[in-house]
Image 1: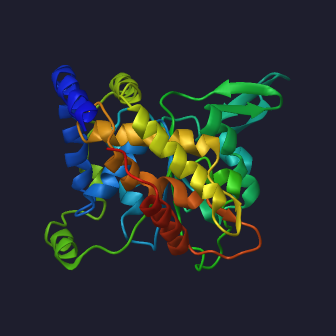
Image 2: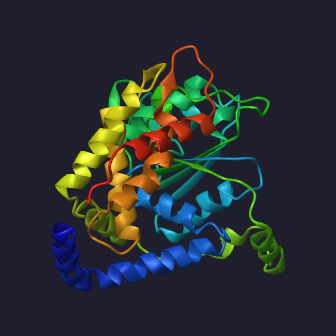
Length: 327
Protein backbone atom coordinates (compact mmCIF):
# COMPACT_ATOMS: atom_id res chain seq x y z
CA UNK A 1 0.00 0.00 0.00
CA UNK A 2 2.89 2.35 0.76
CA UNK A 3 4.19 1.99 -2.78
CA UNK A 4 0.79 2.94 -4.22
CA UNK A 5 0.58 6.05 -2.02
CA UNK A 6 4.05 7.12 -3.14
CA UNK A 7 3.01 6.57 -6.75
CA UNK A 8 -0.11 8.67 -6.30
CA UNK A 9 1.85 11.50 -4.68
CA UNK A 10 4.35 11.58 -7.53
CA UNK A 11 1.64 11.56 -10.18
CA UNK A 12 -0.39 14.27 -8.44
CA UNK A 13 2.53 16.59 -9.19
CA UNK A 14 2.86 15.33 -12.76
CA UNK A 15 -0.87 15.71 -13.40
CA UNK A 16 -0.55 19.48 -13.01
CA UNK A 17 1.35 19.50 -16.32
CA UNK A 18 -1.45 17.51 -17.96
CA UNK A 19 -4.32 19.68 -16.71
CA UNK A 20 -5.00 21.21 -20.15
CA UNK A 21 -5.13 17.75 -21.71
CA UNK A 22 -7.54 16.58 -19.03
CA UNK A 23 -9.69 19.61 -19.86
CA UNK A 24 -9.83 18.40 -23.45
CA UNK A 25 -10.90 14.97 -22.23
CA UNK A 26 -13.73 16.59 -20.26
CA UNK A 27 -14.95 18.45 -23.36
CA UNK A 28 -14.84 15.28 -25.45
CA UNK A 29 -16.84 13.35 -22.84
CA UNK A 30 -19.38 16.18 -22.54
CA UNK A 31 -19.90 16.25 -26.30
CA UNK A 32 -20.40 12.49 -26.55
CA UNK A 33 -22.78 12.52 -23.57
CA UNK A 34 -25.08 14.72 -25.66
CA UNK A 35 -25.74 11.82 -28.04
CA UNK A 36 -25.48 8.99 -25.50
CA UNK A 37 -27.57 9.88 -22.49
CA UNK A 38 -26.83 7.78 -19.41
CA UNK A 39 -24.00 5.77 -21.02
CA UNK A 40 -20.94 7.42 -19.45
CA UNK A 41 -19.12 4.14 -18.87
CA UNK A 42 -19.55 3.16 -22.52
CA UNK A 43 -18.12 6.53 -23.54
CA UNK A 44 -15.11 6.04 -21.25
CA UNK A 45 -14.44 2.56 -22.64
CA UNK A 46 -14.63 3.81 -26.23
CA UNK A 47 -12.21 6.65 -25.48
CA UNK A 48 -9.89 4.26 -23.63
CA UNK A 49 -9.64 2.18 -26.81
CA UNK A 50 -9.01 5.24 -28.95
CA UNK A 51 -6.22 6.53 -26.74
CA UNK A 52 -4.86 2.99 -26.49
CA UNK A 53 -4.59 2.97 -30.31
CA UNK A 54 -7.07 0.12 -30.64
CA UNK A 55 -10.42 -0.29 -32.41
CA UNK A 56 -13.90 -0.88 -31.03
CA UNK A 57 -16.75 -3.18 -31.95
CA UNK A 58 -20.23 -2.12 -30.85
CA UNK A 59 -22.89 -4.80 -30.50
CA UNK A 60 -26.59 -4.57 -29.77
CA UNK A 61 -30.04 -4.33 -31.31
CA UNK A 62 -30.81 -1.48 -33.73
CA UNK A 63 -31.72 1.88 -32.27
CA UNK A 64 -29.72 1.64 -29.02
CA UNK A 65 -27.03 4.20 -29.83
CA UNK A 66 -24.27 2.26 -31.62
CA UNK A 67 -24.19 4.43 -34.72
CA UNK A 68 -24.68 7.58 -32.62
CA UNK A 69 -21.50 6.81 -30.67
CA UNK A 70 -19.61 5.97 -33.86
CA UNK A 71 -20.65 9.17 -35.63
CA UNK A 72 -20.17 11.21 -32.45
CA UNK A 73 -16.56 10.06 -32.08
CA UNK A 74 -15.96 10.83 -35.73
CA UNK A 75 -17.12 14.40 -35.15
CA UNK A 76 -15.36 15.29 -31.89
CA UNK A 77 -11.96 14.21 -33.23
CA UNK A 78 -10.80 16.43 -36.06
CA UNK A 79 -9.77 14.81 -39.32
CA UNK A 80 -11.31 12.82 -42.12
CA UNK A 81 -14.31 10.61 -41.48
CA UNK A 82 -15.75 7.83 -43.64
CA UNK A 83 -18.77 5.63 -43.12
CA UNK A 84 -19.43 2.35 -44.91
CA UNK A 85 -22.77 0.59 -44.77
CA UNK A 86 -21.61 -3.03 -44.87
CA UNK A 87 -23.91 -5.13 -47.06
CA UNK A 88 -23.71 -8.66 -48.47
CA UNK A 89 -22.85 -7.42 -51.98
CA UNK A 90 -19.94 -5.22 -50.84
CA UNK A 91 -16.55 -6.18 -52.33
CA UNK A 92 -13.08 -5.76 -50.74
CA UNK A 93 -12.24 -3.19 -53.43
CA UNK A 94 -15.23 -1.13 -52.26
CA UNK A 95 -13.45 -0.82 -48.90
CA UNK A 96 -9.71 -0.56 -49.58
CA UNK A 97 -9.69 0.76 -53.15
CA UNK A 98 -8.68 -0.56 -56.57
CA UNK A 99 -6.41 -0.04 -59.58
CA UNK A 100 -7.82 1.71 -62.63
CA UNK A 101 -6.54 3.09 -65.92
CA UNK A 102 -5.32 6.65 -65.60
CA UNK A 103 -7.50 8.76 -67.94
CA UNK A 104 -5.85 9.31 -71.30
CA UNK A 105 -3.00 6.87 -70.66
CA UNK A 106 -2.27 3.15 -70.50
CA UNK A 107 -0.90 3.44 -66.94
CA UNK A 108 -2.64 2.13 -63.86
CA UNK A 109 -3.32 4.30 -60.83
CA UNK A 110 -4.61 3.43 -57.39
CA UNK A 111 -7.94 4.88 -56.39
CA UNK A 112 -8.22 5.02 -52.61
CA UNK A 113 -11.24 3.47 -50.92
CA UNK A 114 -13.09 4.83 -47.88
CA UNK A 115 -10.61 3.06 -45.55
CA UNK A 116 -8.20 5.95 -46.23
CA UNK A 117 -9.51 8.08 -43.44
CA UNK A 118 -8.84 8.88 -39.79
CA UNK A 119 -12.02 7.47 -38.33
CA UNK A 120 -13.81 4.70 -40.21
CA UNK A 121 -17.33 3.72 -39.22
CA UNK A 122 -18.13 0.22 -40.51
CA UNK A 123 -21.85 -0.06 -39.87
CA UNK A 124 -23.26 -3.60 -39.49
CA UNK A 125 -19.90 -5.23 -40.19
CA UNK A 126 -21.29 -8.75 -39.85
CA UNK A 127 -23.72 -8.21 -42.73
CA UNK A 128 -20.91 -8.31 -45.31
CA UNK A 129 -19.20 -11.51 -46.42
CA UNK A 130 -16.10 -12.88 -44.64
CA UNK A 131 -13.98 -11.96 -47.69
CA UNK A 132 -14.94 -8.29 -47.35
CA UNK A 133 -14.58 -8.40 -43.57
CA UNK A 134 -11.05 -9.72 -44.09
CA UNK A 135 -10.10 -6.70 -46.19
CA UNK A 136 -9.87 -4.71 -42.93
CA UNK A 137 -7.40 -7.06 -41.20
CA UNK A 138 -4.18 -5.46 -42.47
CA UNK A 139 -5.56 -1.95 -42.08
CA UNK A 140 -6.54 -2.49 -38.44
CA UNK A 141 -3.31 -4.28 -37.45
CA UNK A 142 -0.63 -2.42 -39.40
CA UNK A 143 -2.26 0.80 -40.61
CA UNK A 144 -1.54 -0.14 -44.23
CA UNK A 145 -3.31 -1.51 -47.30
CA UNK A 146 -1.70 -3.77 -49.91
CA UNK A 147 -2.96 -3.86 -53.49
CA UNK A 148 -1.23 -5.70 -56.34
CA UNK A 149 1.99 -6.11 -54.34
CA UNK A 150 2.27 -2.45 -53.32
CA UNK A 151 1.68 -1.18 -49.79
CA UNK A 152 -0.05 2.12 -49.04
CA UNK A 153 0.04 3.83 -45.64
CA UNK A 154 -3.23 4.93 -44.05
CA UNK A 155 -3.61 8.36 -42.44
CA UNK A 156 -2.77 8.57 -38.75
CA UNK A 157 -4.47 8.32 -36.40
CA UNK A 158 -6.55 5.51 -37.90
CA UNK A 159 -9.44 4.27 -35.77
CA UNK A 160 -12.18 1.80 -36.69
CA UNK A 161 -15.59 1.93 -35.03
CA UNK A 162 -17.57 -1.08 -36.22
CA UNK A 163 -21.10 -2.08 -35.29
CA UNK A 164 -22.62 -5.53 -35.51
CA UNK A 165 -26.06 -6.97 -35.00
CA UNK A 166 -26.60 -9.90 -32.61
CA UNK A 167 -26.11 -13.28 -34.27
CA UNK A 168 -29.77 -14.20 -33.90
CA UNK A 169 -30.62 -11.51 -36.48
CA UNK A 170 -31.19 -12.67 -40.06
CA UNK A 171 -28.54 -12.16 -42.74
CA UNK A 172 -25.42 -11.92 -40.59
CA UNK A 173 -22.01 -13.58 -40.97
CA UNK A 174 -20.21 -14.25 -37.68
CA UNK A 175 -16.88 -12.43 -37.49
CA UNK A 176 -13.85 -14.71 -37.81
CA UNK A 177 -11.52 -15.19 -34.85
CA UNK A 178 -8.76 -13.20 -36.55
CA UNK A 179 -11.21 -10.34 -37.17
CA UNK A 180 -12.47 -10.26 -33.57
CA UNK A 181 -8.88 -10.27 -32.30
CA UNK A 182 -8.27 -6.96 -34.08
CA UNK A 183 -10.79 -5.18 -31.84
CA UNK A 184 -9.37 -4.05 -28.52
CA UNK A 185 -12.82 -3.70 -26.98
CA UNK A 186 -16.30 -5.09 -27.61
CA UNK A 187 -18.93 -2.77 -26.17
CA UNK A 188 -22.44 -4.13 -25.76
CA UNK A 189 -25.43 -1.81 -26.02
CA UNK A 190 -28.84 -2.28 -24.47
CA UNK A 191 -31.93 -0.11 -24.23
CA UNK A 192 -31.56 2.84 -21.82
CA UNK A 193 -33.03 3.05 -18.34
CA UNK A 194 -36.51 4.57 -18.18
CA UNK A 195 -35.34 7.96 -16.85
CA UNK A 196 -32.63 8.19 -19.50
CA UNK A 197 -35.03 7.22 -22.27
CA UNK A 198 -37.46 9.90 -21.11
CA UNK A 199 -34.63 12.46 -21.14
CA UNK A 200 -33.82 11.49 -24.71
CA UNK A 201 -37.40 12.14 -25.81
CA UNK A 202 -37.61 15.40 -23.86
CA UNK A 203 -34.38 16.81 -25.28
CA UNK A 204 -34.92 15.63 -28.83
CA UNK A 205 -34.39 18.52 -31.23
CA UNK A 206 -33.26 16.61 -34.33
CA UNK A 207 -33.21 13.02 -35.50
CA UNK A 208 -29.42 12.98 -35.79
CA UNK A 209 -28.13 14.51 -32.57
CA UNK A 210 -24.51 13.84 -33.56
CA UNK A 211 -24.87 16.40 -36.36
CA UNK A 212 -24.71 19.20 -33.77
CA UNK A 213 -21.35 18.07 -32.37
CA UNK A 214 -18.20 20.00 -33.22
CA UNK A 215 -14.54 18.90 -33.31
CA UNK A 216 -12.94 19.25 -29.89
CA UNK A 217 -9.35 18.35 -30.78
CA UNK A 218 -7.33 18.52 -33.98
CA UNK A 219 -5.50 15.63 -35.58
CA UNK A 220 -2.21 16.79 -34.10
CA UNK A 221 -3.76 17.17 -30.66
CA UNK A 222 -5.23 13.66 -30.83
CA UNK A 223 -1.75 12.31 -31.62
CA UNK A 224 -0.40 14.14 -28.57
CA UNK A 225 -3.19 12.75 -26.37
CA UNK A 226 -2.42 9.22 -27.56
CA UNK A 227 1.25 9.70 -26.75
CA UNK A 228 0.43 10.88 -23.22
CA UNK A 229 -1.86 7.88 -22.70
CA UNK A 230 0.93 5.58 -23.88
CA UNK A 231 3.22 7.02 -21.19
CA UNK A 232 0.80 6.28 -18.33
CA UNK A 233 2.73 4.46 -15.59
CA UNK A 234 2.06 0.77 -14.95
CA UNK A 235 3.27 -0.61 -11.61
CA UNK A 236 5.01 -4.03 -11.74
CA UNK A 237 2.21 -5.48 -9.61
CA UNK A 238 -0.32 -4.41 -12.26
CA UNK A 239 1.81 -6.04 -14.98
CA UNK A 240 1.72 -9.25 -12.93
CA UNK A 241 -2.05 -8.94 -12.47
CA UNK A 242 -2.69 -8.50 -16.21
CA UNK A 243 -0.38 -11.39 -17.09
CA UNK A 244 -2.09 -13.79 -14.69
CA UNK A 245 -5.56 -12.87 -16.01
CA UNK A 246 -4.57 -13.30 -19.66
CA UNK A 247 -2.83 -16.62 -19.05
CA UNK A 248 -5.79 -17.91 -17.03
CA UNK A 249 -8.06 -17.51 -20.08
CA UNK A 250 -6.04 -20.24 -21.82
CA UNK A 251 -6.83 -22.72 -19.07
CA UNK A 252 -10.64 -22.51 -19.18
CA UNK A 253 -12.24 -25.93 -19.51
CA UNK A 254 -13.10 -26.68 -23.16
CA UNK A 255 -11.28 -23.63 -24.51
CA UNK A 256 -9.96 -23.80 -28.06
CA UNK A 257 -7.61 -20.93 -27.38
CA UNK A 258 -7.75 -18.02 -25.00
CA UNK A 259 -6.47 -14.47 -25.21
CA UNK A 260 -3.42 -14.06 -27.44
CA UNK A 261 -0.34 -12.02 -26.63
CA UNK A 262 -1.62 -9.39 -29.06
CA UNK A 263 -4.88 -9.35 -27.12
CA UNK A 264 -2.96 -8.93 -23.87
CA UNK A 265 -1.01 -6.00 -25.26
CA UNK A 266 -4.19 -4.31 -26.50
CA UNK A 267 -5.78 -4.96 -23.11
CA UNK A 268 -2.91 -3.20 -21.37
CA UNK A 269 -3.00 -0.29 -23.82
CA UNK A 270 -6.73 0.17 -23.16
CA UNK A 271 -6.08 0.08 -19.39
CA UNK A 272 -3.62 2.93 -19.83
CA UNK A 273 -6.19 4.75 -21.97
CA UNK A 274 -8.86 4.36 -19.28
CA UNK A 275 -6.51 5.72 -16.59
CA UNK A 276 -5.85 8.72 -18.82
CA UNK A 277 -9.58 9.27 -19.44
CA UNK A 278 -10.08 9.19 -15.66
CA UNK A 279 -7.37 11.90 -15.29
CA UNK A 280 -4.60 9.74 -13.90
CA UNK A 281 -1.15 8.97 -15.27
CA UNK A 282 -0.94 5.70 -13.37
CA UNK A 283 -3.04 2.55 -13.63
CA UNK A 284 -5.02 0.93 -10.83
CA UNK A 285 -6.13 -2.69 -10.44
CA UNK A 286 -9.68 -1.32 -10.67
CA UNK A 287 -8.95 -0.28 -14.28
CA UNK A 288 -7.92 -3.86 -15.05
CA UNK A 289 -11.07 -5.33 -13.50
CA UNK A 290 -13.35 -2.84 -15.27
CA UNK A 291 -11.98 -3.54 -18.75
CA UNK A 292 -11.38 -7.28 -18.43
CA UNK A 293 -14.84 -8.21 -19.72
CA UNK A 294 -15.04 -5.75 -22.66
CA UNK A 295 -11.44 -6.39 -23.73
CA UNK A 296 -11.09 -10.15 -23.22
CA UNK A 297 -14.45 -11.96 -23.43
CA UNK A 298 -14.76 -11.71 -27.23
CA UNK A 299 -11.32 -13.31 -27.54
CA UNK A 300 -12.38 -16.64 -26.01
CA UNK A 301 -12.87 -19.30 -28.68
CA UNK A 302 -14.19 -22.81 -28.14
CA UNK A 303 -13.71 -25.79 -30.45
CA UNK A 304 -17.06 -27.12 -31.66
CA UNK A 305 -19.01 -25.47 -28.83
CA UNK A 306 -21.65 -22.74 -28.94
CA UNK A 307 -20.86 -20.39 -26.05
CA UNK A 308 -22.96 -17.26 -25.57
CA UNK A 309 -21.53 -13.81 -25.00
CA UNK A 310 -22.99 -13.81 -21.50
CA UNK A 311 -21.21 -17.06 -20.68
CA UNK A 312 -17.90 -15.66 -21.91
CA UNK A 313 -18.32 -12.63 -19.67
CA UNK A 314 -19.10 -14.87 -16.72
CA UNK A 315 -15.90 -16.83 -17.37
CA UNK A 316 -13.86 -13.62 -17.26
CA UNK A 317 -15.61 -12.55 -14.07
CA UNK A 318 -14.81 -15.93 -12.51
CA UNK A 319 -11.15 -15.56 -13.41
CA UNK A 320 -11.10 -12.07 -11.87
CA UNK A 321 -12.67 -13.41 -8.67
CA UNK A 322 -10.00 -16.11 -8.34
CA UNK A 323 -6.88 -13.98 -8.86
CA UNK A 324 -5.76 -11.88 -5.88
CA UNK A 325 -5.96 -8.13 -6.45
CA UNK A 326 -2.61 -6.32 -6.03
CA UNK A 327 -2.30 -4.13 -2.93
